[in-house]
Image (cartoon, rainbow, N blue to C red; front, top):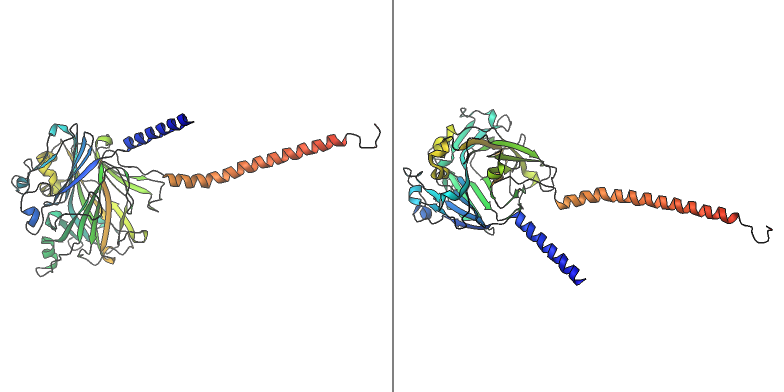
Length: 438
């Protein structure tokens, strides 16, 4: 008996090890303003801080290097190296802050031959449009119509010093207090300067895989990061303002058509009523060695998040980067890829993500919008029906089936017993009773 218990314990241990190995876990370290030795990191430049956060996520000899920054323009740069457990990111701060040397190896890794794949997500523009028709569609308001639409380049924003999120490991936030040129152009020279954070990006890098506790409860794994984009009391330009975020995706792969697709899920346990997940994949033919951006088509009009303040998110067709070349040349992606990012050796696209649904009151109803997305390496996480849901379904379907089966068996047994009883009565009645002659 003891030997049997020991064998069972050994099998259980092996299964746990296999599960842990399959799920993967990385050692994650976060360093804000990594090895920065210039004044701009402590005091800022032109009213804006030089923020660069280096996150290193290691699994044996496989390392993901995240360089996330608001220098010039918000950017997530990810470099995947394999075969060198000691691989490190190198940042030349002097070159990074010098526009003439910005693309001259400002960002690199210790051994470039170990790089497997690299990609970048660049936040290029913030679109605002006056949705007087309540269409909740950016396409309904052409960019040339300045009376209905305002476009702000992200290199016009001023950024506060990056800070860690209290109580959350490997999480940090970039806050913007205002925009510069756009404020003057739209509201005039005497417009009050808003020093309260009104636009922010919050990032979370994970060591393993699970599901985020916050709505919309996106899945995450050890190969990615999630970010929240939030507008909170951002001064609108119109009475019926809605916003859209323009993104550029740079992929270190030969020209290959990126794709953006919606997948359906039967599981609404975590986000009731949301049965769709959107995936932008950089290498559709080989997603294992590519990158993805994933989100659910929902944003929130107030904090804390809840179903009652949820509204829609709309994605648009993928386009080229011709109209944002000058912005991309100020991004951290350019500091690493240099001019190669504009050649056939790489792939680059832009797309827009707009927030809002017809009859939701627009942004001006609450002066608040928040949206969450994941950025990662490899296949995007897929929603699966949880054990709880399987248990509920099994109970809902299984109990009636069990009742029917046992009920049928009971009826059959009862009938058989009654039949046997009648047969015994018939047999007993055929024998002579006491006092009767044979």
